[in-house]
Each structure stands twice: as C-alpha cells, then as structure tokens.
Image 1 (cartoon, rainbow, N blue to C red):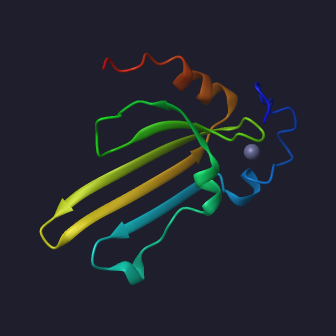
Image 2: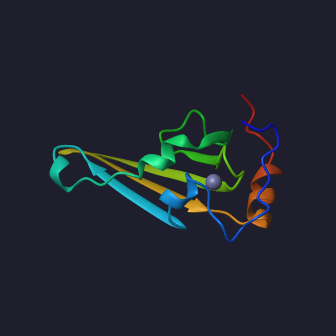
Length: 110
Ligand SMILES: [Zn+2]
C-alpha cells in the first residue's frame, strides 16, 4: 500500500472503484430482509478518512479508496419505526474539489 495514493488516471478505475458506481444506494429494513439491498462489497474496502458524526446513528464519512486514492462520501440515515427500523446508505464518488471541501472541514469537537 502506498503512503500517498495518487489519482493520476481518472479515466481508468482500479479494482475497488470498478466495483462501485458514481452513486450507490442501499436500504435495509428490519423484518423485511428479503427486500433489503446492500452496498457492493467493494465499499467495505474503502478507508474512513474523516468521521464527521462519530456519535450519531446517522453517519457522514469521507472515505478513500486505498488503491487509487479516490474519495467517496458515505452517508447513512436511520429511522426508528414501531414495526422495525430502516437504514439507508448512500455512497457518492467525489471529485477532487468536492473531496478537498470535506478534507478542509473542521473536525467535530470530541
Ligand atoms: Zn480506486
């Protein structure tokens, strides 16, 4: 693994990114497992660079591909319902500008 992965060939995707679309969406509902969808396995290979809401059940994380250095924004939403809970996950590929914006965000005070 490289210390400073560079995204120097944006047209070509690495092994991990080729398994991810620009936008990924997954939805899980407790008790309705047959309808659930999940993010591609490649999503679990991404490294969490920033965790903006570490204490929240609704996540906002900046993630990075360890192979090519491309950044992704991971968001999750959680809804508690009487008949179960709903989880939504969003994974969006960021361009360099968008990623820089999140990298420059102040970290929440712990
Ligand atoms: Zn990649």
